[in-house]
Image (cartoon, rainbow, N blue to C red; front, side):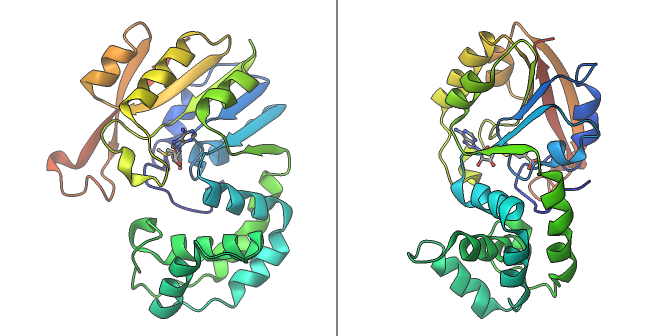
Length: 251
Ligand SMILES: C[S@@+](CC[C@H](N)C(=O)[O-])C[C@H]1O[C@@H](n2cnc3c(N)ncnc32)[C@H](O)[C@@H]1O
């Protein structure tokens, strides 16, 4: 199935390629460390005995939790939202205001993603998008998330908690040089910290990155496969329209 939201750097176009590189048989534990919109997790045909979805962005994870635990209430809350610039701007203002329930907060965030330009949740998209189908789709997402553990932690404690010989980590961190697209900062030291942790894990990992000399050097000892994907919003105007990525694996 597809994810129910878009996210900058989301793996909508690459999910099948990435899954085709997963080890066989499918591992007992599957952990998506930098979950975002979860395009890879939602595209999985196999579901591990233990599946963990994580992202440090609390707004995003609140939305996932509300879909999982309060789906009908969330659907009711979104249904009355009109697609208008005024409401969009009000919701943006209210992101930081106190007194909203988790469901109200999740509904506002969902509308901001759906009605923004490029799903950036910041600028009004000026499209006549109708929320009817996306809202109904949340019921299927709730069903899919029934046995998924949803976490909101930094990658380091998360990996340490779930690392076992039978674990598979899929990691899709902010790409080197594009860290500013996400609300939580990710620094050069974070890229190095991630590489250090992955070097010592017992389980297996598959990691997505942009094709970049700094990243190739950091992961010099691992299997590195270059892949490319069609252009997206960020690369639409670049020559060739192809974006070069890497899949890095420890198996
Ligand atoms: C490239 S996006 C993931 C996209 C995702 N694979 C998809 O298909 O939508 C990277 C994600 O990492 C999250 N992130 C940033 N810093 C993090 C950290 N220290 N620990 C965990 N997640 C983090 C961001 O909030 C963002 O959602």
